[in-house]
Each structure stands twice: as C-alpha cells, then as structure tokens.
Image (tube, rainbow, N blue to C red; front, side, top):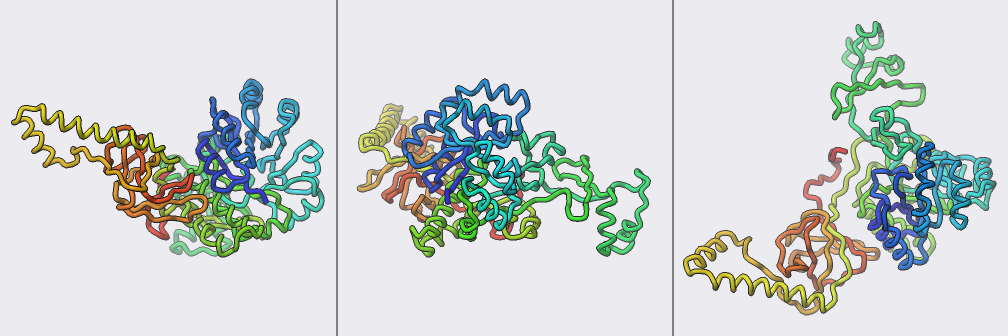
Length: 509
C-alpha cells in the first residue's frame, strides 16, 4: 500500500519524504481546506522541483478540495500558469466543475476524488471512474467490508483511505458547525475546530420561553437523578444551551435527536495495528491527516507507518518495526479509535481535551559545514576574543579594572568560544524552541528511533561570530558542535518540562 502523508509547507514536505512517505499532499494558495496551513506560494515551486529530483520515486498530490464559488473559480483560472509550475502528479478535488478544466489544462495529471465528496458505494465509484478519476479517497464512514465490495465491483479504481489523524464531527469533513458558530466556513478552508472547544451546559430560563417541563422539575427536585426517558425529554425539549468558555454571554442551542447529539469531539483515527486488514479489503493507499500539524508530527507519523508497512511487506521484521510504531505515543494525539472500519460504535465514541505530547521539537539539523566553513567559524571566534583583549588593553588602567570587575560580577558578559575537538563537526541548527546549553537532547531520524545526547556531548555555537552560546531560540543564528554521527534529516527534541503523563493540558486554540 502507498503511504500518503500531509505537507503544510516546504519543510514538512521535505521531512515527509525523508521519513518514509511515498507521496505527500499539499495545498496551494486559497484552494485547499486548510487555509491556515502555510500552504505553498510564490516561487516555492522551485524548491519542490528540487525535492522531486532528490526523491525521484516520490509523488506529489495537490488538494484543490474547497467547494468552489464563482469567484473562487475565476481566481483559480487566473492562477493556472502558476499552478503549472509545480510538478503535481494528481489533483484532489470534490467539485465536479473543476474536472473538465483540469482535464484540459493538466492532461497528464491524475484526478483523485476528495473525501469531501463522501463517496461510499460501488456505483458512485463506477460513476467517478467513468468521469476520468484515477483514485477515490473514500468517505470515512465506509467499513472494511464495504471497501472490499467496492474494490471487487470496480477493481480498476484506486482506493485511498484515511488511516491516521483527527476526524471531524462530520466524518468526511462536510461540517457546517464552524460556519454556524463563528462565521468561518470549513468548506472554504477556515475551520475553527469548534467541535474541540470547551462548553458549559445550561438551560434557557423557563419563564423567558413559557416552557413548563416536568422532567426538568424532577431534575431540580431530585438532585440530578433522572430516568433515561426524563433525560431524553430534556435533551429534545430545546431548553438546553451551550456557552463556550472563551465566549461568555454567547449561547448556542443544543438539540438531541433519537441517535445523535449536536456537539461531538471525535477521537483520533489510528489504524497502524490493522494495516493487514486494510490491505485485505482492497485499499491501495493509506492516508495520514495533518497539513496543519507540526513538522515533528509529520516526520514521526510517517516514520511509524513506513516501518509498519515495511513489516507488512516483509522488508523488515515485526520486531524491528515495533519500537517505531510504539513511538506514535510520543506524538501529540487524542484517544484513538478505528473509526467506522469495524463498527459504527467505535466511531461514535467521543473524547475531550486537546492533543498533547511529552516532547517539544527543539530544532532541525542540516548537513555539516565543510572543513573550510568550520575553520572560518572558529577563526571568527578567535578574532572576537582578540578584539575584546585589544579593547581592554587600550583602556585607561582604572577603566580596565572597572571593566574586569564588571565581567567578574556578570560572567554572562564574557566572550566564550568552543575549543576545537578531534572528530567533531558543526551542524546548522534551525532552532524552534528555547533550549539551554547542557539540556539533554534526543536525536530522531528516519532510521534512528531516539538517541539521547548528554550536555557534555555537544556545544551551541554562533556560526557567524564563533561565540559559544549558553542558550538558543528561534530566529537566532545557531549551530550544533558535536562528535556524534548524525543522519541526514535528523530532528532534535527535548522533554517538555510541563508535561504530566495521563493529563491533557489545555493549550488554548
């Protein structure tokens, strides 16, 4: 089975490929359902082309899966020349109005039906095949048994199914809740994830609406003990309301029908232990959700599913794959479910809270500086020390004494440089979070599960000045000096000091 992973920007695309994705899917400008993802713009197609050259066997899909209005269609047509610069292998669409346009303007590019189209039966799949679609991303509501029926009925159509990631309350993603509560339409890419918010449940004051509800009177009189029939009567009465905690004073009605509740927060889908069943059902490609997720998420999930698929195909043993599969617990996630694949009851179970992880992504490491570049870094540090000494020597003795006394009182002001060490190399360090020198680091890479690195095994250095750094942060010039072997595309993570196992923190939205 093909592994299809998300890429919200160029860096995530690079890591998706490096960590095992066969294919990555991206969004361009305003035409994907993840507007808040970085997406791709301006001249980034040049970097994408270079990545495709580096990974010639990898494929690139482009999500054009919004529901197009007339003005969206006009804008898309105006941007055709821009889109044609990307090496796109397939477009993922839900709007059939795009089909003749794409077939005309991109004759060599495959058409894939988005899960937004909610395609869930064999006759629909046959119809889309007749329109020229190469692949259908089936709606999340299909079971494995239904997938098998669809594949048997239309074996020439490729079937792609989600295997991992967040699910919407409207499982194929056709949700109106965000637009209703915030005016931000999920169908135009602006989903506010309202289903994940925290709500207080209350009731509309009876006297305001002239409601006289005997079941509610029982609730008040009997200290919260209700029969199932009384509880159902209250839920269907229309008197319940929600107040979102960050929007006090705004109330939303809640109505419960016979077999649904209006507000749900779905569990995350995780099928990594059931890939054999998906393959047996006829799935050609498994898909990971998450174009708005972090680089760390993309890399770790891609790596786990790559190892699981390699084990399924006999390329590695199950024992070799097991620790990488288990490392999914180190990635931010909610409770897991198998969705609709086995039975609907699994999908209907909800959860609360945001996703969480015990780790923070500290940085990405680049290829080591050349010997010549490294010599320049150290020479810059030595010059810095020499210039400071010359500055002190040129001072009046009293001023020099005061300056030296100040340095003794404030050692952080002293210039420190790294000493040259045999076998050590300097690596570009793209810092994402603050890390103090001496903190235990962990290196993760496509083939290294996790390598602990003590504070004595590395030093931080400014590659422009050669100065040794006591701490690093995002947007600071920084490099890592170490004697440890480092695989290409290595990420650096650190333990999150605020993480508490078993406790989901509220990180806001």
